[in-house]
Length: 217
Length: 208
Image 1: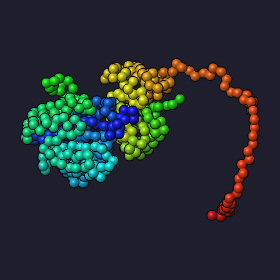
Image 2: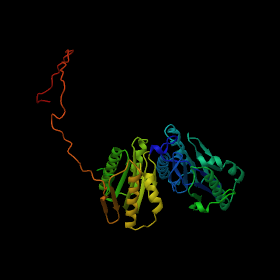
Image 3: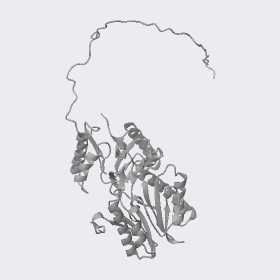
Image 4: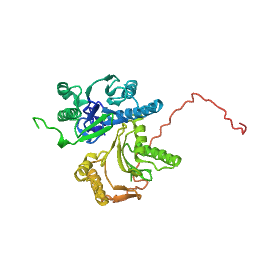
């Protein structure tokens, strides 16, 4: 397997990826592509799931080493469910993000994974938290992450508006992901979107041939 | 001949690529673990449980255990196929190839895989994919083994297809004593000096 990634910084399967989360009026949309790569030249999976559910209304998007990210989210899911049972109420999104941050910061030497934790809770409604590589925790109205995000900073900065409707936010996310997947070689596959609101969780998949096309395609 | 399809549970089998010792021992440990679980809980193990256990173990060792595994089985929730990498990453897949011949086999699988194939089609596909690996990869060879797992039971076909190249000795390779003539013989005595001598008494009496 080593021949697949001679110069890669991440050992093993990596989600060279594009992930994003956007707050809209009444909820939050998180999205990702579906490609997992080994090194810079082999696509080890076209259908990997990067939107991991850690609780009923809380999801985590993963980026970086797939093994590290899966291990951290598994641990966080367990700790969050334990916390929720102890408190006898659904956990806050901030609690989930803090658990992720604690794991990332304490093990920052060994881990190479970044996360976007987003969801809805009773106290503060829809929220988005970024837990980056070294364990920084930051709350934002929208955020993008992964290797493909560098290509869409201009787009999201220009096009984001606070308090969008669900349709506007869905279109914004799909466009952003399609643009990133078009330029980044380690992002691709299909677009996965999850809409989290008070009412529940909805999973939308946009296959490759239904992605928005831009002027040069 | 090497058996690369390992038993995990009556309804779960695992193909191992990578370091043979690692795949052997890891699957052995997993199998023991699941047997104990079955006895304790009175339930048949689920494929996803095997995956979780293996994933935790491999992650703990940070890729030092070179096991690339494909786990497949049928349990009460249906039939499942998972892959687990040496660093602890896992993926649920409809079809997959791993090992040094993975790219060759993947070509065949990508071309002919269809959802809801029937059994004979699937066996032919897997057999052809392995054959591609055998032909195009120097690290793969000899026979093709298949393991078919269904709700009714397991069919471990070993071998499904034998290699057409048989190893039969063409001549006798044992030589009589004295075949190689000895030309000269010299004996050098090694001078050894006794440097230190210590005696330790052992407790050999029956009382303890």
